[in-house]
Amino acid sequence: MPKLLQVDFPFSGPFGAEMTKALADLAESITKEPGFIWKIWTENAAEKEAGGIYLFENEATAKAYLEMHSARLKELGVAEVRSRIYDVNADLSKVTNAKDLTNF
Image (cartoon, rainbow, N blue to C red):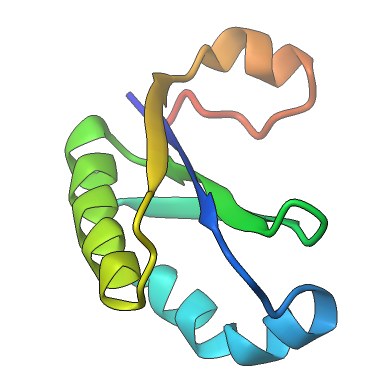
């Protein structure tokens, strides 16, 4: 069953197009993580926060990624990483235009 991982943390920038340029290599590396399906990048320059909403194939791969990502962020000086893992209701999500998730 797919799992949704929500992560956010304090971030001083860059944001917008500058973030896209600065983190392009990181984005590419994330696509190679075990169990990774997709990520929506989130940013809020006014609140100085960033993060993402990820979809993983299962809870084990979501937890493994979260552990690795949290350690990486802490090495970069991020003191607090907030996260949650959710089940996905594939049937209702499909009604509201999400991709068909029944194959996971």
